[in-house]
Length: 230
Image (cartoon, rainbow, N blue to C red; front, top):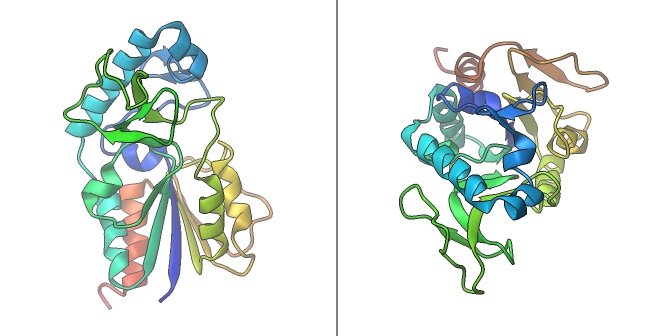
């Protein structure tokens, strides 16, 4: 069975109504990302950071998977599909994809402030100050902040190196280390990039660029791969 590695970014979730910061202005829902997405911000004002992610979590839970998320699920009918996502929402899970690797954590879980390997499901949408992990430290969002290691990046690189097809959806390939994953894909492997705002990509072999939004471009690609309408 052919192995497909799919790297998804903010663009696929934006069509479900989720706003995500872009490097161009460094803002996320009106907040400077360094005030809400760094260990230093958490140390300086944990109540504000906790509240910020509680509100983002509520928004995520109100959002629904879109046609692009659902199209990727259909690929599993014929292919071995692994989704590597930069997004912290759970829309791929709720769409029904079965193999998902979150590079930057997932907002619907909490983690220990002392040991990031200790993670827990969240009941409802809120982590309260005073809620502790088994080590006695405050629970925080299970999100990789700026300045923290991306623990799943090596596993993601291995998946990409073994892929028979590589898809990139809704990401500009400007944010590292995730952007470097395309360099692990074998040169002769077909690569498909779907993003309406994609900049020119140099020195990438066997590349097809589709400058459509995800709900259009991904659906078309999946239908083509599954032979829909033939």
